[in-house]
Image 1 (tube, each protein chain N blue to C red):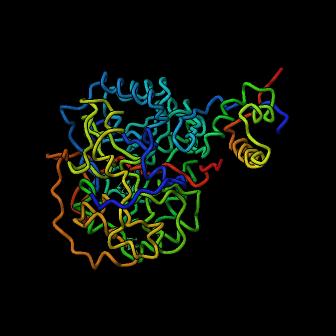
Image 2 (cartoon, each protein chain N blue to C red):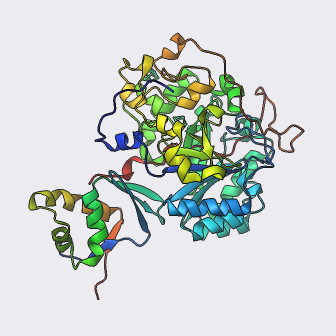
Image 3 (cartoon, rainbow over the protein chains, first blue to last red):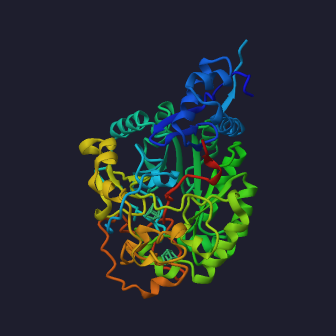
Length: 88
Length: 400
Ligand code: SF4
Ligand code: SF4
């Protein structure tokens, strides 16, 4: 997953809040919570980088923090809040 | 309001919710007080249209404001929202402006054609109200012919290919024994069952004593909810039942004025759909706009202060029950910082109950109504809106 290109799902909108952001998927009508402002940054930035690892670099996520971010991104992927991006 | 405790720095998500968000996550917008029915427990005492109701242009301007505030979706109710001549126009307008809509209806106007249109957009969800799994239980509460109308609406939605719409049931003394049957009706229609709590709001206050579930039925309901888990939606209605054992899924928090609010048909903003009373009126969108009311109203600021539990503070269940529903306490004349009138630990019995507050508005029909409830032993008239006090499902939490 880390080496692939991802992006926020087109049907999902993010609304900033002090704890991070609310994410709403207009297709599934599901509301989720991103409980970390840095995670919100990562999610927003995904589309600007060739893969997740470089996104994490760009946002400045330390090595120690990466497992936590990776797990969070996997959960977001399971819920289709983020999706693979076609890079062709 | 209740006394204010010391404010801690928020650490858990629920603490952030307690202190209020930039915009509500559960906004109910009642489009009209007009209704073709007269259910006995209507939370908004609906029936007759109010001449001051928002115009089409005012409604559209409000939708624009919701879009600016990124309010992703609203729960539209009434009254019966579909009786507004501009209802379908407003629905389309909301969708075009990225405001999703879930609307509550008694089903009378959900024809095959409408059902097909509704099924064609992801942005719209429908919630059909039914309060008995048989006409014998439903019609005395909601009115003659309302069972058939709701089933017909659900048939139309299913046949049009609409998935996961909601069958919404207010749990009463009369229907607690029908939970499995409700589930089957929902399953047969590809719908999701949504159970909500009867609250003594609007005309519900008049029938509360006769209709609210008895203590052993509350236990039955709790056990059923635990057994059926996340497949059944409750809008976090039943957190006062958590005192029976494990907390039920959800936030376990009264969201009034924090994440929940109501915009009524004349543009007044209340803390919660079940709290239509001047004591919970925060302001009007006609004066300063919705955003200003949401962020600046003194009432909302005070609701976002930490509350003390009063007589509940020493209760072992306080963390999940938190003294239950503010509106239920208020309309039964109980102190706001004490136990819920349906406290499952039986503590409501020790509370001195004051006079029931006089309603501050009533739009009930005055004359005869075609589909009036068949009076069996219950006295009055119908509802249409259910509060979504918390739209949050347990699976919705993503930990960063
Ligand atoms: S607990 Fe009661 S007052 Fe609070 S948001 Fe829910 S319905 Fe409204
Ligand atoms: S005493 Fe209060 S907190 Fe305890 S169960 Fe009753 S209502 Fe809930």
